[in-house]
Image 1 (cartoon, helix red, strand yellow):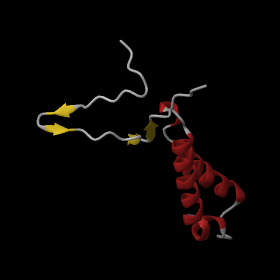
Image 2: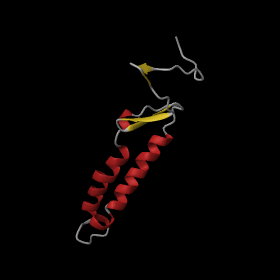
Image 3: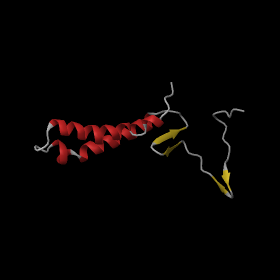
Image 4: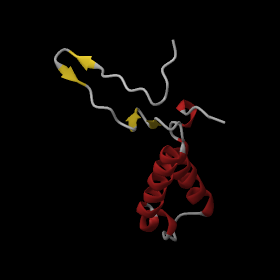
Length: 93
């Protein structure tokens, strides 16, 4: 039996009633009632941006590192942060 989107049921565990939330993070993905991936993707973009900024002095401005090494640092640290958990995301069309 399907539950309609506007219908809300209380769920309890023992004497405690669980809170109803519009979104929550499970492992590395954000799951929301809207089924939108926007919030999850935005969080990964922000995290990758922070990683990129953190590596600014240690890698990007370091004249002793070759372009190849910088590219590998980018792939390992930034791109892996950006794509982390993408295999767990369900694409809704």
